[in-house]
Amino acid sequence: MAELIRLIEDIKACKLCEAHLEHGVRPVVQLNKTAKILIAGQAPGRKVHTSGIPFDDASGDRLRAWMGIDKDTFYDDSKIAILPMGFCYPGSYKGKGKSGDLPPRPECANTWHQNVLALLTQVELVLVIGQYAQDYYLDNNVTVTACVAEWEKHWPHYLPLPHPSPRNNIWLAKNTWFEADILPVLQSRVATLLTS
Image (tube, rainbow, N blue to C red):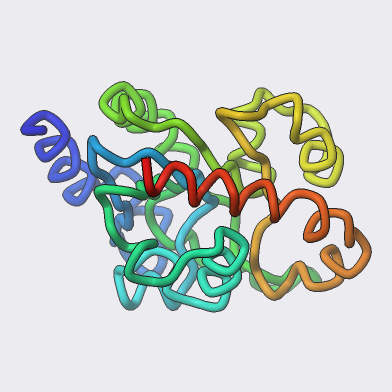
């Protein structure tokens, strides 16, 4: 446990991307060696950057509903670890018609992920959220929709998910099979892991 505590302290002190982050550095992770579920997300949004609490926003509310758990369980680091592709808020697009947040900075995954994963030896399920995490964890070369549709290829250790952001409401409306077919399987597995 001491090794992970030191690693978390190093992550919290990280300033590798500072020059690229207009809102400053504030690494947000949730890690514990006993966690059986790992959430591999994208990067904190502006609200999470402010609070320092992972998924402390509408995306988190939806993700918790997808998993079938409450906030107390979600934030129990002995059960659930959270390791985003980028640990700090990357900022948002400005102009040129794009909206939303910038992609996660690549330095985090390249510098920290393998060291962290080597210490999370109890993880039995990784929720792989969004394109950047799917590319990294699943060596993905298809769209998020195709990756999520082919979820059984990665099961039971990995489960690719779309991002739970309200920006994905249209995707969820078009892909009703996701909530009908995948969420019951996810909730059953989460319940099993949390009580075993």
